Image 1 (spheres, rainbow, N blue to C red):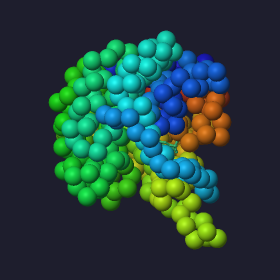
Image 2 (cartoon, rainbow, N blue to C red; image 1 turned 30 degrees about the horizontal axis):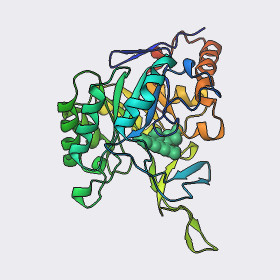
Image 3 (cartoon, rainbow, N blue to C red; image 1 turned 45 degrees about the vertical axis):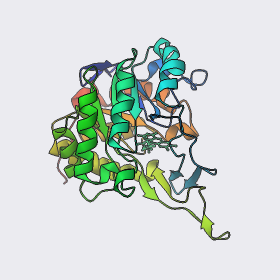
Length: 306
Ligand SMILES: Cc1cc2nc3c(=O)[nH]c(=O)nc-3n(C[C@H](O)[C@H](O)[C@H](O)COP(=O)(O)O)c2cc1C
């Protein structure tokens, strides 16, 4: 079978397929449903300094070829994660990437300092699609200067594990944000997070989601994600994890061709909880059928049009 082994930022993964942040719980909830051991890595729910209760229901709604969510970053807080979730996660045998967020620059640094003291993690992933409460609620990832400040603070707080920065697509030019993140110390980049959207209940004349607007994900956003991954891999030299609408082996191959080293699968887990665990096997069969010896050799080999 084709070789799926992938190395990213010095971490060895058995496949390039990773469960996406916020869509796979803490990695433990899927144990009885899917073969979690076959997944390349698991990204945890976003972790904050203090526990967060999240947004009022409804939190998710289906859209054409996608899903809009406003979960509101519900989580147990970083200290409870280290105490209550991480010990069990260590036994899963799959590398764990801790997804981290904050509303002030210091929040990111504080969460990372707590994680630096814990064993059993492979990497950090910084979610910068969060409102910066000191800057009128504008996303950190929407402003290159604020993004640099958050990444620099995170960089200063960690030296034990690689630091990924997960970029927001809600920007004019994602390459500018990618360069700012790398210059401030990112070892790798993840993209894309969800696109801002609004679902309207015409009869009730209200937004569908309890929080109002939300984040769009799923197959509807795949072309946007592929374009941005292609742009960013051409503009920077750090490894990139691509995501947005991936559900099949062919989707994975499309992202690898556009330059991604690994991929993440999010929304697909909502309609098929075993999707991410089954994908590595399906990718192996797909590559075998194509006569491709390894997933790694596809990286960045997209041809010119015509
Ligand atoms: C319900 C839900 C919760 C999410 N929570 C997070 C999160 O906590 N941190 C994060 O960085 N991204 C979060 N995301 C974004 C996903 O990780 C991913 O970037 C995005 O959904 C695009 O991939 P997909 O189309 O495969 O879902 C969330 C997405 C969904 C659908």
